Image 1 (cartoon, rainbow, N blue to C red):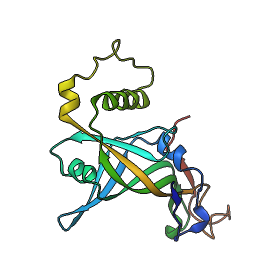
Image 2: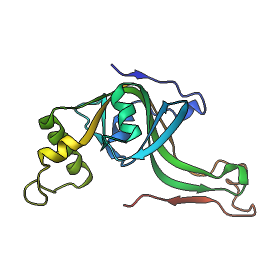
Image 3: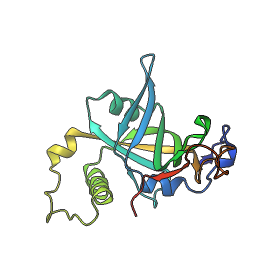
Length: 190
């Protein structure tokens, strides 16, 4: 069971219930972990399937520090942000961004079964490249490739989502006669 984390800074931006949607729409996760006295944050592609809402999958080279750390079961943090707009204000202080983000905490384990790995990799390719079909658009992963690639399942134990939307919130922004300009530049297509 995933527990809901508490947003302390700007609690009015809490987006409870949006965690899975953000993970489903995101493309890059930042994975935070601590090994050998240092904290690391690595951007990675990832796989998330809403039918398994408590799991995130990361793959990489078996020799990488990240994969060794995640597969060892140490605590990790996963963060995904969807940038939706750049907010500009008539006052320097009120420049901001519109976004949706989720922070997840959990522990990893290595997935060793090649059949399970192949299925997750197929699903991940379909998530990033909808409509591509194994056998038609690309060759299936060989046993050698599956064995050489590390796959980690991060079991989410806690998560919290946060979002900001709307225009600038500075005192001068509501006054059309004030000096300067204000507005939002959309960073999303459609």
